[in-house]
Structures are given as C-alpha cells and as structure tokens.
Image (cartoon, rainbow over all chains, first blue to last red):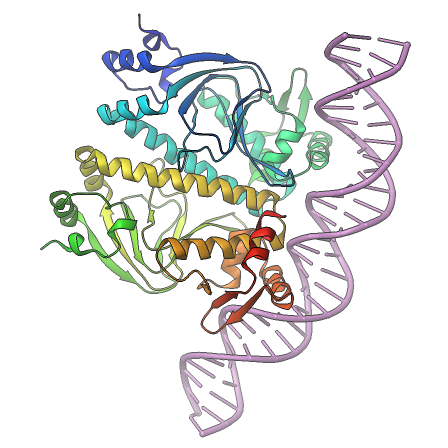
Length: 228
Length: 228
DNA sequence: CGTCTGGTTGAGATGTTTCAACTACGGTGG
DNA sequence: CCACCGTAGTTGAAACATCTCAACCAGACG
C-alpha cells in the first residue's frame, strides 16, 4: 500500500520529487484528515507538534491583536503547507475556510525524515522561500496600495493561483467571506463591498452564482492592481 | 588561513554550527566586502547570483510600485542573510542604510555546499522560517495597527533586536531616516515625525544625539505597540 | 413565517495624507 | 570664515480615503 504514490496533487506539494521508496516512508508517518468549513486546526501559541499539507479546500492563517483586530496572513490551497514554527509554538491560528483535506506530519517524525531525505528539506525550503516572496508582496499591498488596488491584486492572485493549479482562471472562485477578504487586505467589510460594487458598476467584473467573480476586463484589473 | 573560524558574529549567521572543516570550505567560496551607506547591492529583477550575509551595519530591502510608491520589507542587521530568490531573480532591491560589511556567497557554489552540508541547509531554512514569522508580524502591523502602534512596535523591535545581539536595548539606535521608517510602516514621513513628537510630548520617549531614542516608559511602549 | 447571518448601501466622523511653509544642520565654495 | 545651498526633519491647515455606525436587504434555516 502506498497512498502517496497515487496522490493526485503530489506534484504541487512538499512531497513532489520524492522517489517511491521515500514516498512509502512518508506514507508511514502521515495521517490524512477531512475537516469541514470553519474549523480551527490549531491556534496561535499552541505547541507546534505537526506540519500540514493542504490537499483540497482552502485554509486561512491569521493573527489577532488583544482587542480582536485580525490580520489574515494567507489563504492556503491545494499543495500549500502550514505549520512552520518558531520556539516550538505556532505564531498564528489556522482555520478552514471551506471543507478541506489535509495530510498531517508529526513534527518529530518529519524532522527525522528530513535529515534522511535532503531532497525533501530542499523542497520545503524552496516552498518557504516562495512564501516569503508572497509575504513581501503582501506587505507592499498592505502598506502602499489603495482599496481598489488591493481588491484587484487579490482577484488577480486568486486567478493566477487557480491557473497554476490547472483550473480555469476566469471566472475566479472566491470562497471566502467579505470579512475574511477585509482582514486579509487590511480593510473593512464595508469597503470591500463598496469596492466590488464600484468594479461591477464600471463593468470590470461581475458577480456570479456560487461565489464566482467573472473578470470582464482582465487588462484593467492588471493595471489597477499595480496602480497604473 | 580560516577567516570564518575567527568571525566574531558567526553564531548569529548562517555559518553558526558548522565545524572547522566546513568553515574552511565556506571560506573558500566567500567574498567579504565593505559597502558605504546608501549603496544598492542589487535591484528587483536582477539575476540572483549570490546570497549575502550581513556582518555589520544595516541594510534595507524594498519593493516599488510603478509610480514610485515604496514598501520597505525589512531592515537587516548583523547576522541576517539576504538574497533568497524565486525564478532566479531577486524580488526586491537591497540597499545599505549605514556603511556595512557583507559576506557574499555565489549562488552556484553555496547551493553545491548546501547539498554537502545538510546542517547548513537546515540552518538557512530555520532562518527563513524566522523571517517568515517576522513577515507575518509585519503584515499584522501594516494591516491593522494605528500610526502610534506602528511606531511603538518599531521601536520595540529595534530594542529587542539590539538586545538579542548583545547590545544595550535602551536607548535604541535608529540609523534610518524618517522616510525609511515611513516606507517600512506604511505611513508618510510627516506622520512618523508627528507621532514621534506626540510620544516625546507624552514623556514616553526622548530623542538623543546620534540618532538614538531613549525609551523612558518601556511599559507604555509595550502596551501601545499591541493597542492595549 | 420569523429569525439569523452575510452582504450592501448611506451619511457622518476621523486618522492619515497632502501640500506648504519653515527650521536646523552640514557641507561647499567663494 | 562665512554666506549659501541642499537635505532632513518638523509643524500647520485643508483634503480625502477609509472607517464607523446604522439601516436595510436577501437568502438560509428551523
């Protein structure tokens, strides 16, 4: 039995590029689980005893201020991993946005495995580098972009991400609530809503059934995302 | 000859925890250089042919929007590394804030060395994880904190960083300009200036000779940084 | 059929920005 | 040696983008 060998999303994940033997070893230590929408996987401050890989669905990561203000630091989809920690505790909370399936790797075992399989360590490092680059993009967005630029960048990001995973890039599936979008972009739900209506009125996008956004004028979205 | 063996800041860097033989190998591929203030090390989009380690001074990383709006994504000091890339090109510009000394590792050689020394790869990965955590903190700051909270968080960060490197944590040395602080915190220079004066007037801090900020009421700064 | 939640819209409040003037300082050249 | 200039920082007043508070709407669900 080698469930990982048959994993349809392996090429997107940490597990890409492992050989069959390594995959077997990996399968030995992993637990897969299905989690419904709105469930907390772990909370800021919890002991970081596992690494996760998202194999389906969407997960959000966020941090809170004492008074409840929230910043979502990322939406994770198929192939993304989560669970990196400093000082053995998670620095953020992880919660499912939609129903999701995950592979869970106990920290100790995955650490041991990484010592054995440098390829895996390398892969994880490269994925973390990408995360870091995305985080820097997000800082630029949060610190310097206007509401309209933020929304356009957000739609573009979702679209490009879908494309990279082999899905249709338009219309874009937007499973998260206005509140989640607001907390991701450093706005309020009202501003998010108003900006969507603006774009709708301008004919740049239209909202469709099932949380889908059709981008009618992709070029305009591109330009507005960068403030051109 | 083994310059790395004698490196006084090794414990802070990527090179910590390498054994003498490994250090010798490392020394073979590295170039050290001294750079004066205000120099560009590399620019966004440049081919990423090297990794750097800051051994003295302060370096800033930033990204630009087409119209010139700028977001500084980090200030690097002794021990920090820079040069991670996606698609073989840098995603940000690196510029010295003060005069600085750096170790430069050609990408190809350091990659080869990492394959040989998993310890080093591991160390780099752990440092990247810390970077990522810091980036998430910064997103919370940019997206959800007020100007006063941002400034207090900033001073606190500098103070804690100095402490971790064995320097006095108060007064805090603030070598960067108001414009740099503004672009780091997602504010304007005017707001930065005004907020400093507010804190000064409230008796929480005082500005000293030589770009130093004395924190008179550390508890107040702590509380204000988190919005308590 | 009422209730609840998520989303939209409106009007006024507000924190930060913008634009502008002014000061302090350090270097430079006459 | 000092007038001059340019840069960095500070302060003020007005403008503005976004937020806050509030009402309203639509669909989901018991």
